[in-house]
Length: 366
Image 1 (cartoon, rainbow, N blue to C red):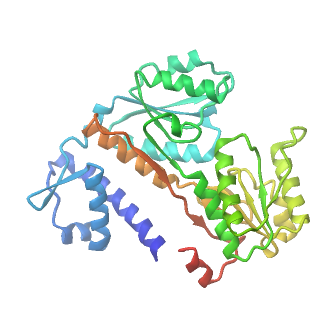
Image 2: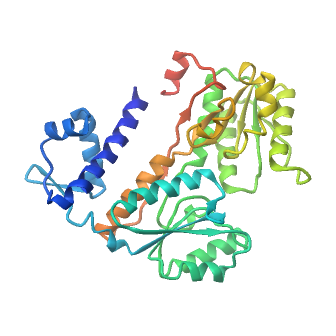
């Protein structure tokens, strides 16, 4: 029930924004009463109140003499100037599907109110001077996971130098601690949630497929997973280091089979969405879901439409996008807004590869 209410709350929140945007050109400044507005949005008054409370926190509406009004400066997105979303990719496509979804959601929301947002794609051939030229006139930079020809320390130092002229909002590790403003997925919680799900499902011998221990995102997920089982004094089997002599998907396939052969009854794939080929042997052989609980990380299970669905911890794309959009709208109303830091807690996506009873789902808050 909590999960359905949570989704409904965000749905109504988005519908409320669209309602304001649609009616402002017709001169709407004051919102109708709760009963009328709830009927127009097709929701309960209780859920509407939650959406209204969040809208007030985000500076979309204000209360004057017990009456709700649309904030005068909310729609004035031109105050934000030029917004640039920076991510790894080339030829118009982002490397990571999670970031592609994130950009599209943010772009859709901001474009509806006339904000100027563009995409800056980077690859291994980009120099810092290239990036400086592309982001020179940016007022706000949404920084995710760019790919340049420098190491992490050099990249961080470069973006910190860019922060002298642009407000940078970090949306991913390893930049969260380098800037005063960030909104991102809590990757440590990703590992914790995956571990708890396997534990509740009755896993006795957990396994961990690690793509790279040097990747900050993966390392945090790994730490969250290992710390949970360490508190229970349960050892975790780990995959070997990445074998550069084979393709990434082939390495993952071999690693999954090796962990299965070692007797693991639950495996967490630390990496992102590209495991459908890697898991093919286990899926088609019947080892999953009959014998092994397999959990990965992705958007909402949509990646695996062509294969047996794999249980996953959600990237929280909708929640991150909503929080970023709300912060930018608040900045439009108040450019001097204090620093903002938020880690989005992900949630579990349940399907065929994680077999849970109703009681176990209750234990996980599903």
